[in-house]
Length: 202
Image (cartoon, rainbow, N blue to C red):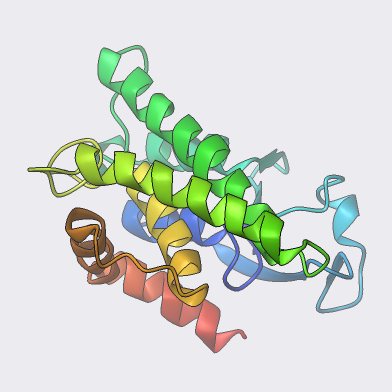
C-alpha cells in the first residue's frame, strides 16, 4: 500500500499507525501547496480533495480522512490492539476521541497556519485550543493514553497535533499530563521510525 503524506502534516498519524501495526507500505511525498508529487504529477488525481493523508490500498482503492484511515490500519492488525474490536462499546469510545481530536482540536489549528489570518483571530483560536487541551489534561489523569494504559491510533493523532502546538510555541507547562503523554508517545519505537522516515525523505 502507499501512504501519501506531507512532512509535519496530519498524515503523520496514519504513518505512525502503519509502523505500530507492522504493515509494509511505501511513502509518497506531496507538495500540498502545489498539489503535486515529486515527479510533478497531479496529486488531485489520487485524492480530489487535495489533502493528506491518502492511503492507496493493495486493491487500488483510495481511503482518505485520518480517523477513517487509522481505523482501517488498526483493523488489519487486530493483535496489535491499536483499536478495540468493531461493535464494542470501547470502539465507540475510540471514535468519540477521534472525532474530538479531529473536529475540536485539528480544525482549530487550521487558522494558525493561514498567513492571512489576523493575529487577533489567531489568539481566539489559540485560546480555544488551550481550553480543549485542558479537557485532554483531565482525561489523561491516572492514564498513560487516552483510552487507558494501552496505545491506540487516537494517541498517534493527538501526538501529531501536540507537535504542532510545540512548533507554535504553545505554553503547555501547566498541563503536566499532556506533556508527559507527548514524551511517552515520542519515545515509542514506531513513532521514532515514522519521524525518521519522514525526515529522511524531506
